[in-house]
Image (cartoon, rainbow over all chains, first blue to last red; front, side, top):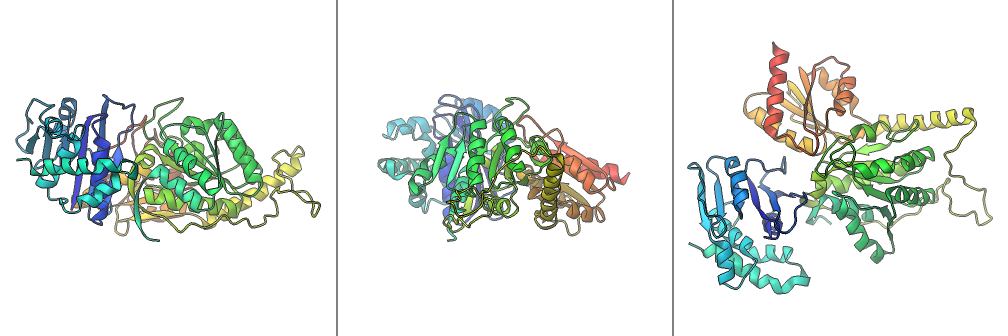
Length: 177
Length: 355
């Protein structure tokens, strides 16, 4: 099985970090994978996106132009990538930042007010990980089990104090109904 | 050590170079290869190596020339416009028969171009680039694992033949992360080289590193001698991958990121009943001419897939001696074709060849 994931939003929302977490989760599960960031003139406030491919077979192209799973954290990203999702795919929307619903009937849409949840629960700036928590819950390509180990891979020792809040954000998303 | 780690392609080159015994890095920053220099800046001082950010690309390549003269492993890295600046020095290094590694993580051109991935320095890398009769050994990784493995190989081949090597990557392979297994580090081995300028200590004749030969007979002799080594490289060092070629009716030819995209297209074509395979040159010079000539006896046509206006396609046509149609699927300027675009080009080729 191959899952192609595209994560998109503003620079500064932790788009690349969220992708890195998924990549490390895949690595720990012994899967084949690739992680590819957009590296244009992005900066805080600009657009950023990140392609992650998790597969049981060697990964062909690391570029995700037809995602199975789309995670969007701003309106321009939903506008740009909504039509690219494969029929039957899943779209995860940060509904605190994107007011309109997904326009397609042939994909499953999940709405998580992640940015608001992050502020209300004392994990500001971690809406990205709330979104990922929900993805882990709804998509079968990887499980919640082992998230601590994957988090250790991406939260550097220098920022060890951020481990707990990241884990909390993942749980918030995972438990969000 | 067989532990898989996640690394960016650029970082994998740097770590592999250190493990291959390189302790001298000279460069000048440019996107999209910056992580390589940054990695070297962090690591080299800790292991007694040299990281030096030069005042320009031209200075950096001449520092490489200097260290290479002493027989030590040395490298530089840049991206397309920066590699153009290095061409004079590269020609001098080639003319002086010195080993070194030059990394080009290509971006769109010509001119300053853009910062998105490209393969449009193929001609520059494989046909010379600087002035005079010379070649570089050119390797083209298409995964992060190969970024590491081919770095090591490039150092070895360069030293073996006394020919500078180039690792020709692109922005995508440089920026992406994949699991990679790094080889065991080996300490720099300074085997005494009978050409290196390391000081005579009054014990031996001078070694002279030089690319100036004012007597034409001498220069011609030098060039003939060098081309004998090039011939040995062409005979012994060609590397390529065959993918689903055994029963293929059509052959895609692609390297680097274009080969990754093409693999998706080949798999999809097979699902749709087309017998398609891929030959992926791993060395661009020496080019896998023989493998393509062999394939020409089997397939009805070739498709060269490139991130350029069409450069490698010329070598494919030469290799198959125009015995089969050779079509081109191209994107340029930092754009990358989708697997669907490759598939469409394949269908067009098949339709044309069968009619």
